Image 1 (cartoon, rainbow, N blue to C red):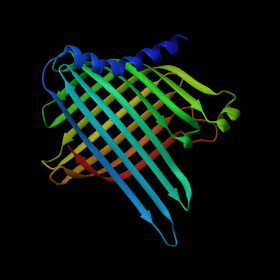
Image 2 (image 1 turned 135 degrees about the vertical axis):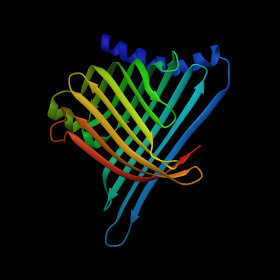
Image 3 (image 1 turned 90 degrees about the vertical axis):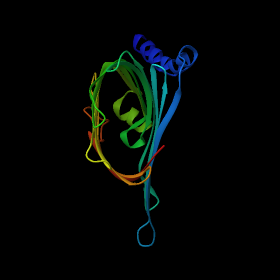
Image 4 (image 1 turned 180 degrees about the vertical axis):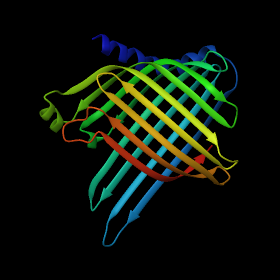
Length: 246
C-alpha cells in the first residue's frame, strides 16, 4: 500500500506542477521542441514496413522547465508484427539555481514483446549540471522511484503472478557535445535499481542538413536483469531518422 501511495503521489504531482507554475510564476512562456521520423517500406518478394517516430516538447515557465515526450516504434515483416513499442513521459524541473534543480517525472511504456502489458515508472529527486558552457553539457539526476509492470496473460501464467512492482533508486546521466557547428553527439544513461536492474542507454549523432532539418543516427540498448521467462535481458535498436527542430 505504501508503494502504491508513493507512485500515486509522484504521478499526480507532475501535471499539477505545470499548473502551479502557471498560477504563481510570472514571465515569458516559451516553447521549443523537435520531431523525429524514420520509415522503411519494401514490396515484391519481401513485404516489410517499419516506422519510428518521436516528438519532444519543452516548456520554460519561470523557474519550471517542463518536458513532454511521445515515441512509437512499429515493424511488420510478411504481415507479421515483429516489433511494437509505445512510450509517453512527462518531467518537471524546478530550478533552484543556475546549476541545481529538483525533478519529478512519470512515464508509461507498452511493449508486448517484453512479456508485459505495460510498464509505468515514476520518480523524483535532485539534478545537477556539472558542465553547461554552450558546447558541452553534462548533468545527472538521482532520487527514489517506483516501477509497476503488468504481465500479459501468457507470462502471468508462466510466472505465477499478474504484476511486478518495486521501489527503486533512479539515476540519469546526460552528456552532449557539439562536434562542430552542424553536428552534435549525445549520450544518455538511465538506470532504475530495486528488486532488479532496468537500464537504458542511447548514443546518437545528429548532423544538420539544411535549416532546422537534421539527420540522426542512434543506437539504443535496453537491459532488464530479470526478464520474463523466455525473453532476452537485452534489446538493441538502431535508427536512422530525420529530425526537425522548432
